[in-house]
Image (cartoon, rainbow, N blue to C red; front, side, top):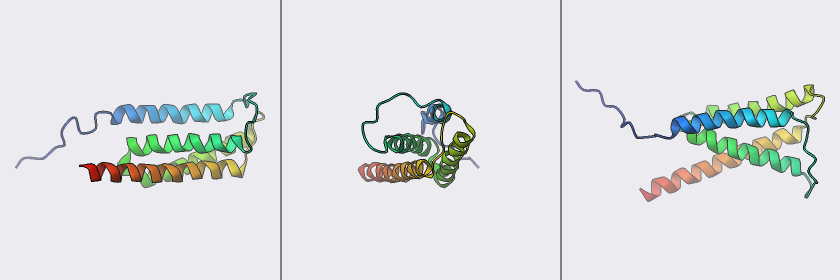
Length: 126
């Protein structure tokens, strides 16, 4: 009896994606605790847009790197966003806001939609 195995090149970039995902998670956490940069506010809720974009990126990276663990990843990213807010609450340099976490959650939700649409488009083209 012969065991079937997946070809070696099925997902050659998965380890790279996973490494980049972890580096991105660490970078976002560090940046979230640094003093806010002296950037002029171009639009209202500019900070929320930053949270949203960061979590779209984290979500897409994570979902692409760990596609079989999508539900776990989504829950982990929501918890991660909450952890950032708790860490900011404990920091003298930053301020925690529920709206920041909601922007994180909206970013994760958008990442799910984009990832799902991408998978469907890829499946349809094959």
